[in-house]
Amino acid sequence: MSEIGVGFIGCGGIHNNHASALVDSPDAYIACAMDMSEDAAKAHCEKYGTEAWTTDRDALLARDDVDAVVVCIPTGYHPEAVIAAAEAGKHVFCEKPMALTVAECERMNAACEKAGVVLQIGFVRHFCNEWLKLREVVQQGMIGRPVVWRSVSGGSGAPTPWYFDAEIGGGPFIDGAVHSYDFARFIFGEATSVFADLRRLKEGTTAWDTGTALVNFESGDQQQLSWSWGLPGFGYGVKADSAHDVLGPLGAVVFPGGGKLQVNLEDGEHEIEFGPDTGADWFHRQMNYFIECVKTGRQPTPGAKEGIEATRIAEAILSIGDQPAVVTL
Ligand SMILES: NC(=O)c1ccc[n+]([C@@H]2O[C@H](COP(=O)([O-])OP(=O)(O)OC[C@H]3O[C@@H](n4cnc5c(N)ncnc54)[C@H](O)[C@@H]3O)[C@@H](O)[C@H]2O)c1
Image (cartoon, helix red, strand yellow):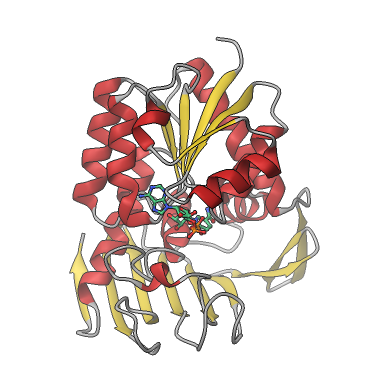
């Protein structure tokens, strides 16, 4: 197969990370940009030099020069777009979260399997050196097992209101935290149960925006998240603290930045270096991997399985809401 023609479905914020990776790719080019907003589609063309644009998804999917699509629309609309793309025979890169429910994820996966197309989910942390090094350190047993991975984060949250709509974005315990559930699963294996107690601090929104969730894994490892997007405004409005660490029976992993992890053991503090990289590097690697999978026909990891299992954790946590309970997965 020569150069892969890629079409965008959605030309908002995150699509820029993928578009710049594609512009740099020797193996792919952007054939057409689609957004329901004409302004967004045209702005894409001006910025990235793409010649064709449309506001009609079916017109994009009917194009012979589009081999694959990159789906970057609000999460609640992913299923419809991914299924339509698969039915048109297009390979699919779908931003995370795959969808808001496991049932929708399974429909998306079934459509892609039936059409024989590649389906990759945008869990970009699989391409981030720091998180990959953490996985190696924990799996090698440097701090012993089982471990508890703690994470605290707070602020105004995502940039636009749809992220706070329970039916479209789902709020932080699916939208942001799905990266964490997925990566914990990548380190620890399958999850067995969740506990949660969630709140809504922001006014005029419908998704849970604040609370605590615990995820227990078959391995005995545990993930703890105490997160909020409940502060006033959107995006970088009001800030609170964020931190994470991993505790084990032999020590702790902490994250000092600067291209290293720090492992604190009884005999002292050990620096573990990894090749420093930037967010742009992660997105470039992620898109290069997708294009390679399209060219070879190999099913990507992270793919449907990862999307489904991370959504299973999120869906169970959201089902608990403000009535604290343990749900077995
Ligand atoms: N990988 C990451 O770290 C990461 C980061 C941010 C966002 N995301 C995910 O990417 C997706 C998009 O997020 P965003 O921040 O770019 O959103 P955004 O609001 O900035 O942009 C969405 C774009 O989609 C268009 N759109 C909306 N509905 C549409 C439809 N049905 N058909 C066609 N176009 C439509 C809008 O006009 C807009 O231009 C979400 O699923 C989000 O969770 C992932």
